[in-house]
Image (cartoon, rainbow, N blue to C red; front, side):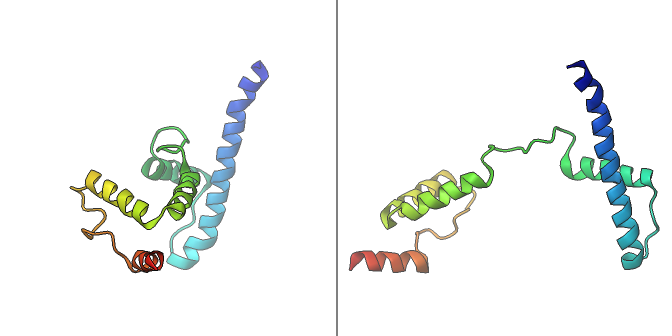
Length: 125
């Protein structure tokens, strides 16, 4: 276990150096010819990585913020939506609309789109 604790910082530094080298190579290959910018050194590339992490990734850990469901949750919701009848969909949307009434997220006051209206007419026949 003590060996692992010794090699973890070394591994982290190796990964950071690898990313900095890739950023440096890509920058020096693309930016001078596309935008007329100057080439960067290894340390400047490492600084760019840190700056991008601060600006776009935050200072927290590497985990994603949110509910942890990711795209799997979206697939689950899509399957659930497809299994609903027109009345169940209408009740679901109206419930969400009442919940988010102040933000105006759903737009129209009634749940009627071309797809759902067609489905309702097919169900009535």
